[in-house]
Length: 98
Image 1: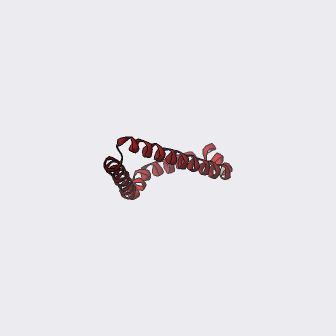
Image 2 (image 1 turned 45 degrees about the vertical axis):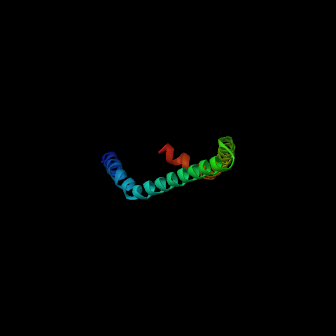
Image 3 (image 1 turned 90 degrees about the horizontal axis):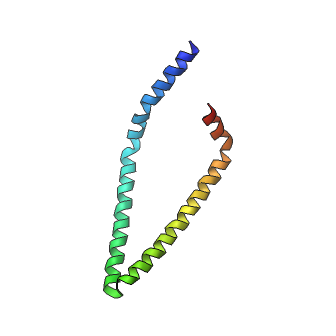
């Protein structure tokens, strides 16, 4: 009887998962849209300014600098996630072993 209850509880939890994703899906989509608008605005501004003042080679240098900054931010974010996972190692392994 205990095994059946466990199986039913897991089935119930699986059915609730899409509803939980739908509840904050609108906010995630809004944030994604705002990020895209910001990126396209930045790219458009860089292209317009460099076209007017110095030629398109300047845009390449600016985009290279922006990609270096993005890579640096990405490495920092990965290091923080690694630190968080290291702090929660016991909890993570116990949840994965269940």
